[in-house]
Length: 104
Picture 1 (spheres, rainbow, N blue to C red):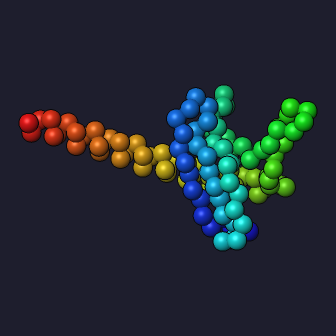
Picture 2 (cartoon, rainbow, N blue to C red; picture 1 turned 45 degrees about the vertical axis):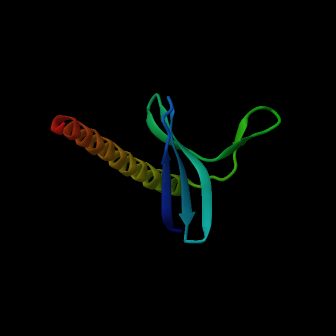
Picture 3 (cartoon, rainbow, N blue to C red; picture 1 turned 90 degrees about the horizontal axis):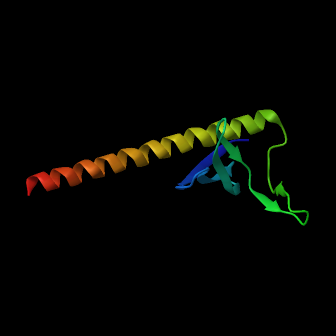
């Protein structure tokens, strides 16, 4: 199994940091995986649905620890990459705005 695509959608929320879609073997997509900031750092939560008892159950999830760790590592690495790109773009935009003010 190979994750062939990862799309990260950054969110500005207290705990929810991003939604992520992954494609496996260019053939199967899992949408709405969450990147969450918890008390012990960032973690990945699989897509879930509320059942009649009120609790949440994962809709899709890895069966073993090895697969879970691989998916989490890929998602968190991609999240950090996209976040860094967004921060760099924002910083560049801020610098451009400051330079434009100085030119006036």
